[in-house]
Image 1 (cartoon, protein in one colour):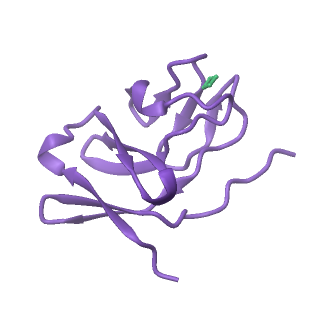
Image 2: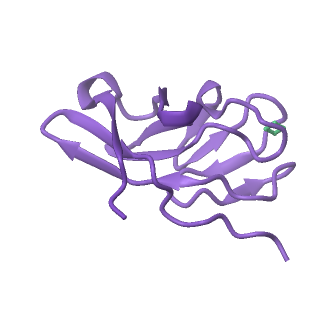
Length: 114
Ligand code: FES
């Protein structure tokens, strides 16, 4: 099924290294990140204890949770540093002109550890 797309602002308003919070349907929170000109979207909920990842620091391809310092690769959602072990969900991004759209259907189900 084709994903529903939400408008997530304009590319010029999201310079490299920045993260913005975008709300989707059903209170879906998305952290939309610019990594060196590539835009990625992940669920804005840390899998450790629900921290808001959009409030964290984007360092290269990794975002750091502001609560206890877990890190996630925003390209894949993979947890790269404890205390988080479960990945965050990733979402597709489409650019049209200067507009950013994020698909609200997840790209893939997160994989359980073990
Ligand atoms: S809630 Fe994100 S590291 Fe604990």
